[in-house]
Structure formats: C-alpha cells, structure tokens
Image (cartoon, rainbow, N blue to C red; front, top):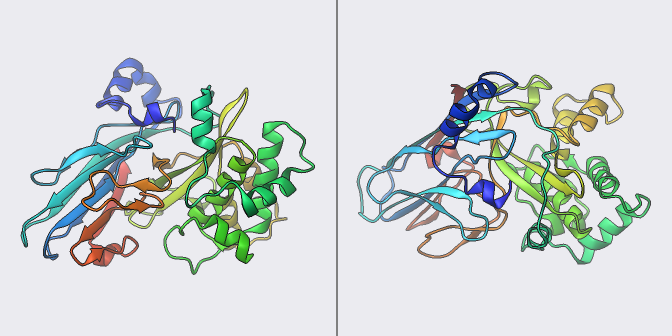
Length: 346
C-alpha cells in the first residue's frame, strides 16, 4: 500500500460509494463489516493498547474510518515511518472497565497488478533493509544465486524468487500465529519452515536484495474462499484468521501481488504435492493475483508503536497489542488476552 494511500482521509468508503456507487454495488466489489472487541477489565494497573485498522488501497480495497468506543483518551494515530492507522487507547487507573469495540466497513474486489509510479525516494523506501529484513550478507548472496539465470527483466527476477521460495520453504503447522518473519535465521539455519509472515517476508527480503521494491501487507481473512477452502475464513469469527501477503513493484507495470505462503498452505492442508494440477494452478494464480476475501491493515514492518510510553519496535501490527505493568500480553492467545474479531457481509 502506498504511504499516501495509507493516509486516506476519513469517510473514504462513503466518498467512493457516492462517487461510484454502482461500482461498489457490483463490478466484483463486496462489502464486509469487520469488528474487533476487547475486554481488559480483569487486568490491573496501567494499560496501553493498539488495534490495527484496515486501510484504503487503490483499486481493490476501500475502508471506512473506524467507529469505536474505547473510553476517554482513545484516538486514531499513525506511526511515523509508514503512516499506518492504529487505534490507541490507554488507562492509567488501577482498576475499572477497559472495553474497546472497533468497527469498519471494508469494500474489496479481487486484484491483479495495480498500476503505480514510484519516485526515487519511494523506491529507496521500499528497498531499504530493516532489522528483521536484511538485504546484504546471506540474503543478497541467496538472491544473487536465485536470479543468476533469470536475466535483467524485473518480472523474471521476481518470478524466479517467487518460485524459489515456493520450492524451498514449507508451512510448519507447529509455528504459532503467522510466524515472526525471521528471514536471516531461516537462511542461516537452513530450516525453511514457517507461516505467512516467515515465508512471504522471505520473498520480500530477497526481492529487496535485488533492488526490487517490495513489501509485506499484514491483514485478516474476511470470508470463505472460492479458490480453496483453506484460503478463507470458514465462519464469521475471524479471531484466528490473520494473514500476511506480499507485493513487489515492477517497472512499467506497478504493484504485483504475490502469496507464496498460501501455495505452501494448500500443499499442507490439502495434502498435495507441488506437482499436482491443483497446486500448480494455485502457484500460477498467486503470482499476480489476490482473492480479496481478505483486508489489508498496513505494510508497517518493524513498526515503532505510536504514542508508547516506552518506545517499542514490533515486527508487525496484525493483532491487537497490549502492554500492562506486568509486560506485553500474548497476542496469539485471544482467549487469555480477551479479544474477538468478526466479519460479516455488510
């Protein structure tokens, strides 16, 4: 998502609906009501909370400004590096009611390449090395080997990296949540198992090492898939449906969507080999297409939490995140953290 798109103003969905209501009513558009509810009332002492918000992204996703109830002092804020929108709430009292409800309407339609031009500064921004995403050392060496026979065309390089990631990684069901995005650790250890934030972050890092602007997009599945049952949310409860995707910018084309992690998800959950016709079809589709039964929150890799009393860097903000006097709550345990996400047609 372009940084300017991330900062789209309030009422984007309503404006788009009034300007092109027919498009939102048909032409492949679907509308969803995404709700997050959090109850921290059983926690004592001061608490800080951050909730990621769905963003507007040109051509395939339009999100309304969040409607929320969160008590005094809550506000929508943006991190300094990416401009990602976040609901931040805090409580200083020792005890009391600490409940948050956030609702957005999100319109989505399936996407292919999104035409876009990047300035020189934007190219530098989306090829920069990050603490969790190096572009030198073993990452650069690996990327160089992958593209050695691909030629100089950006699409050919991106496709070579995509195919290498699909061929050399696997979905590890034992990994909690979406993984941690440990690109360098994967390459150095040779253990190439993980989930979407590991596998797709590897694709992004290898693209960046080749000078191809690339980014993760962190989000959540909204509903069932017409492609593969395993690639959709099976019920309206999407508390455990977070999913990270990737995109790479190609000169003369724009932002190309990719999802090598979902190829490996089909392999694991359908118990099929890479050579099966079903997996081959998904492999082709997921280089250049996203089924938009999913909403993107942001592309804020290694985000510094806005307004934190003690500045902290997180690899991503894809789940609600809370910090108490006793430390950070476990984002991957919504039952003990006490949050729930739902998605229904709107």
